[in-house]
Length: 182
Image (cartoon, rainbow, N blue to C red; front, side, top):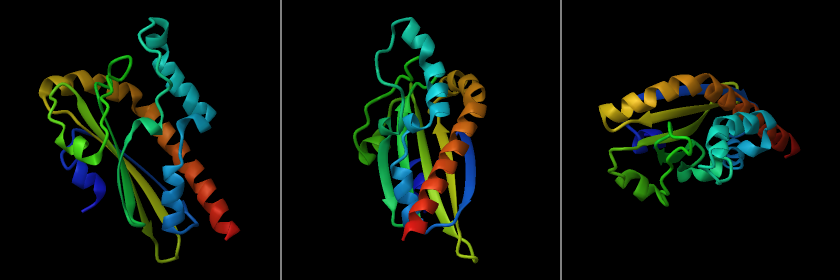
């Protein structure tokens, strides 16, 4: 069972992306854990635009959403890792809940918010290369939450996909650079 299956076996929305990397799995997953949206100017711009209405209405003073806002859910050796986020993502400030541990993520029983897990998995091909895949799943606990989240999901999906592709490209570049240095 993968970590994403362990933490979010049921889901309503899903997005997947993958890339081929010439580096060992442990190096790749280490690079994943170091990712920050703020390191990419295009991603930073996309998040800034998403959060602009909230800031203009003086409803948010938080720093831009970044990977550090996710709860680290775990790492399965050199096979994968997962991060979680809980909130009302359609709200201007994402309606984020502070979830401090994997156990707290699993124990969440709120019916007015979504749970999101972003998982990463690495598989080694017969040629010795690695395939890094990322999957994002979102679970909406009630039909009312699903109706509130769905329009937001379909609006942000193209941008989210672009962000994931840019993240995978940065991870590939960093991992291949590190693997070449060894």
